[in-house]
Image (cartoon, rainbow, N blue to C red; front, side, top):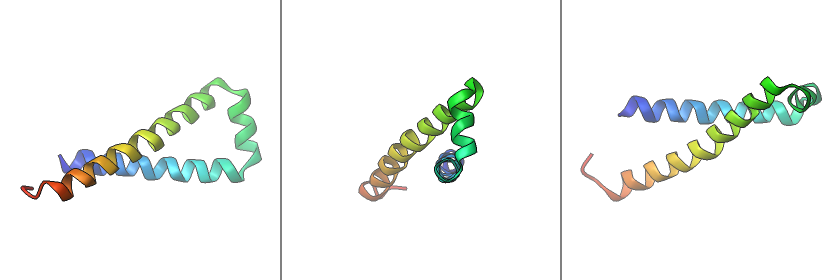
Length: 69
């Protein structure tokens, strides 16, 4: 189970790196706006950022509330 949470954390951090690059790179923003493939990558990064963040928050709350692990 720890490998799953490690993977979620890695994807979440990768999405943060992607969005930092996206915000600071006008060429990438143009590419996302004009290309369907990169728009899909952008949507996947959105899901990883939002969904991964929520999943990690819930996981850590459960870990602190339930001390049987």
